[in-house]
Amino acid sequence: MSAAKSSAAKAGFHLTPRNLVTLAVITLTGLAVAMAPVITAKPQTMTGLAIVLVVVALFATQALPGMATAALFFALALGAGVVEPWTIASGFWSNATMLIFGGLVIGAAAERSGLGRYVARGLMLRFAGTYPMFLLGILAGALALSFLVPSTMGRLAITIPIVMAVAKEAGYAPDSNGYAATILTAVAGNFTTSYAILPANLVNVIVLGAAENIYGPQLQYAEYLLLCGPVLGLVKGATFMGLVLLLFPAPAPLVPETSEPLLISRAGKRLAILLGVTVLFWATDAVHGLKPGWVALAAGLLCLLPPIALVGLRESFDLNRLTGVISVPVMLGVAAVLTQSGAGRLIAETIMSVVPLAGHTQNFGFIAMAAISSLAALIATTVGAIAIVTPLIAEISNATGLPVKLAIVAELTGLQSIFFHFEAVPVMVGLAMGRLPVATATRMLVPLGLSGLLVVLPLMVLWLKLIGALP
Image (cartoon, rainbow, N blue to C red; front, side, top):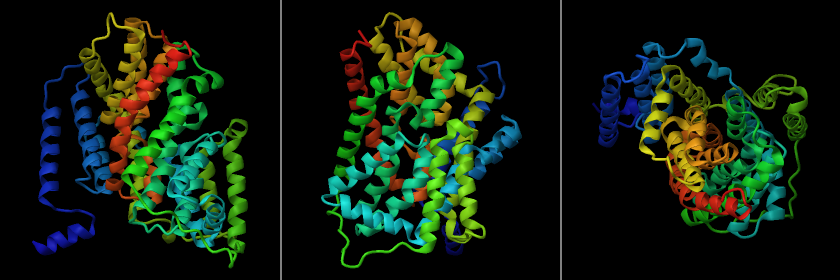
């Protein structure tokens, strides 16, 4: 028995009584849902719903290692036939997957070449001071980059290697509060505040695109920035800073000595040029049409292959990083299962039957739309929530008189309130790249999600009333 436990531990399985009980509860719940009477026109709806609930629960509880959960999802989805094999496999060559693959290689190259440490040293000399100012500098830098690089994961590919080097230079060990706060600021702080800028977040783009297909054009860049920027950007950023300082207190960062200047190596210079070209391609994607993921993949391959050859494949990937890569196709596959099995529509109809909307005001409609979006993301991830919630905009608009464009803003206001890492692909990617344990991240994400509904949402309504968008 001890030998079996030892083998399981090496594979990442922790056969604790708590995990065994959790697995049993999740399994029984999944079976109960799958065998429940079919209440929709599609016979595979309950099976699809069961698969999604099991996978989301496993990611949330970490009862199984991420790789095992990913393998289980593909086995269940393909075995049950709830989605076409080509559709579920397409996530492996998606834009998001290519971004994390390329980003991990670039990060390893930055570490090996010394470029990350070189940039980190320069940043520390300019911005290091108190611990709050240290984190604020990272958050402000990430938010400023949001105006230039129209992809959260593209920004992560740039910032995570540098931020890891900054944390090391600041004296924060990988298991310290300071390191956790640094990575969380670059990942969760960047992701949540980027909802304030229309093209800076893939979720924004998808929601606006889906809504435009259904309801016609609604929002332009400047109008969106006016409606969302002050609250989803500044207020959300302030809320994040307050929580991260409260939950992850740490001493002031160490300021590196300036008597021995750090010189950049030839390899670092080559990587800096490659990164400059990469960022240029990311910033001009509207001109050439190349997706950020494929640009990142090309940059990563150049780092691996001669004549540049800045890093080796083994240095770029370990089990945790591979788990991050595999998790992306899983989350995209979950959205496909929800759509093709009809489970997404079932969830939407159930939510609408519980929330009374008729006869209520626009303010109530805005709050309800945001709450529904956040709940849907918790059940079905952010990608799945878009497919569930966006078609409901017309019903909520008709019942409460809420204008369609404000219903879209409400949906995005709800989607910025994430409670777990698996809800948002960029957060999963960033945590994997930053090598931050999921349990540590959850300590921040749960209260951050609550603050999004209890603090950011009411202030969003107040702001919209002040500028006359809501009565």
